[in-house]
Every structure is written in structure tokens, then in C-alpha cells.
Figure 1 (tube, helix red, strand yellow):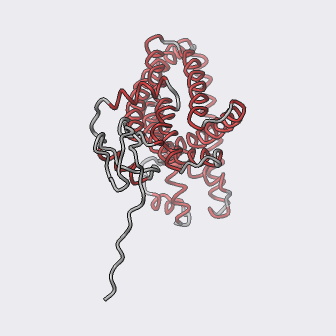
Figure 2 (cartoon, one colour; figure 1 turned 180 degrees about the vertical axis):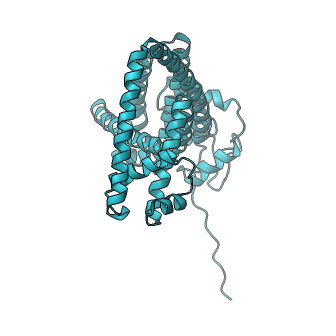
Figure 3 (tube, helix red, strand yellow; figure 1 turned 135 degrees about the vertical axis):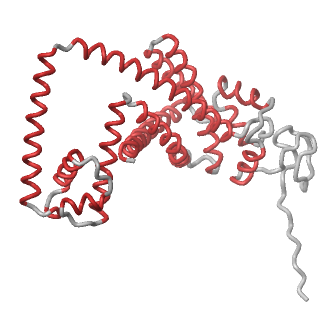
Amino acid sequence: MKLRKKKVPKLKNLECLNCKKPLDSDDIYCSYCGQKNVNKLSFQSFLNQLVSGLFSYDSRFWKTFIPLIFKPGKVSKQYIEGKRARFVNPFRLYLNVSILFFLILGISNKTTFQDGVNDAEVLNDSINNKSITTLNNGLKFSEKIVDSNYVYHIKTKKFDEISFGNKLNDLSVFIEKNPQIKDSQKALETLGYPITFRNGIIFNIIKNTKTNIKTLEADSGSTFIKKILSYLSIALFIFLPLFTLFLKLLYWRKKMNYMEHLVFVFHVQTVFFLLMIIFTLISLITKNDSIQAIYLLLFLVYLFIALRRFYGQGKLKTTIKFILLNLIYFLLGAIGISIVSAIALIA
């Protein structure tokens, strides 16, 4: 009978990384502070700490919050060095702050849009009746041209022979003239077009876009902004891990795993949201949007100091990487916002 070999435990730390008390190599937990005796931060240990403390806050909040704001990069550095028991889990902190941020941002945008509506009403009242009459006549004339082009298009060409741009135009006019038809199959049958998956998708995109535009006009964009914010909060869960990958590539010489870079990103993004919350509230109270320039400057200074402290590189290297990271961040952000806005419009 073959005896199964006993699994030899891996050698662990001889002192607690959190409280520096002595440990035996086979100790699983520190008997003083309770932190698990592990060296490198792994995804499993990160997730375990997140789940165990997701709904409870204690003194760790202030021990995390104060140095996170006033000592850029310090909390992240200590966290990956093993001093984790004293701090709130980075993802948990980010999650709670981001919820608060999007809540306040939603309120802020609602107030801003209402101010815009009031200004628009004042402007509209200042336009004389003659200008309105001229505008209406012009619109009616334009509608006649569109209708004649639409009829000519339908009569002279098969749908599959029409270019994509003209397909959009033809279906757009049809939906405008027949708002009661909601089903793509019925609409295509009415027009005599082939009932294909592609044509159905085109019809639904145009129909949803027109509906969303009408809703946007009716409520001054507040519903559209809410949709964007709801999608944006989800998009960040894709954006931040992707940005972390660029960060890891940029600091590839550093002996850090992906999760350790991600801790830094979560902390920096948390501060980004915290500063946004503070300055958004100040902007709402003072009615002064120019204060946001101060916020942006403060965050850029914070990010530079955090990069230097966390990665321990000189001013020149940090400056170069700081510029590259900001370019990557704003590029990914612009792409993300464009995609989110498009989804919000056609969904």
C-alpha cells in the first residue's frame, strides 16, 4: 500500500507584517492582532478580507481615511507590505465612496439641468412671434422635401440595394410617420423589406434612439443623465482593471503583482471621488463652477505624490510616467464615456 506524502506547509513570516510581533513559521494567524500570516497579497486573501468586513465599519475607517487623504500613497504601500488589519479593504472603501459620489452627482446634475431649463424658458420668451412663424414655415418646407425623397427612395430601390445611411433615413421617416408600429417584423413587412436580423437591429436602434431623444427633450435630459450615470458606474468596474494593466506594464520592473497595483488604483480613485464630492457640494452651495479647476489641480498634485511614494522612483521618472498615465486615463475615459453615452441613447 502506497502511503500518501504529507503536504509540507510553505514557510511563512517569522513576524507579523501588521503589528511586528514574533510568529512561528507554522502560525496561520497572528495571536496579537488576528491578521493572517501571509506574505504576498493574493486575490483570495484580498477577496476574503472584503467579504468579511463588507458591512461593518470600525476605527479602521479613520485609520484609513485620514492618511489616505493627507499622505498620498502611504496607505497603499503599507497595505501591500502586509499591514492590512488596521485598514479598510481598498475595494470596499472604493465601492462605498463611489455609491455616495454617483448619488451626489445625480443630484448635482438634476439641479444644473433645472437651471438650464429656466434659462431656456427666459430665452424662448424673448424670441418674437415673427421669428417663430418663419422657423415653423422652414420646418414644414423641410418635412415636405424629406417626405418626397423618402417616397422616391422606397419606390425606386429595393431595401438591400440602399446604402446604410439611406436605410437609416428611410426607417427614420417611417417610424416618425408610424409611431404606433413598435414591432420590427411588422414594420419591415409593411415596407416590403426583407425580414433579416440586421434590418431588425437597425429598426430597433432608430426606434429606441428616437424615443430617448423625445424623452430627453421632454424632461430636459434628466432621464438621459440618470441612464448615463447608471451605466458609467458599471463601466468603471471594467475601466479600472484595464487601467491597472497599463500601470503594471509601465512599472514592469517593480516586483509587484497585479493585485498590488490594483490596490493603489482603488485608493487613488477613491480620493478622486472624495475630492469630487467635496468640490461638487461647494460648487452647488456657491453656484461657482470655476472651483472645479482647483479640484483638478489638487488631484493631479495628489496623484504625482502618490506615485512617487508608492513606487519609490525619482522626480524625472515619476514625471514622465505621470504624464503617460494621465494620457492613458483620459483616453480610456473618453472612449468609455462615448460608449456609455451611445448605449444610453440606443438602449
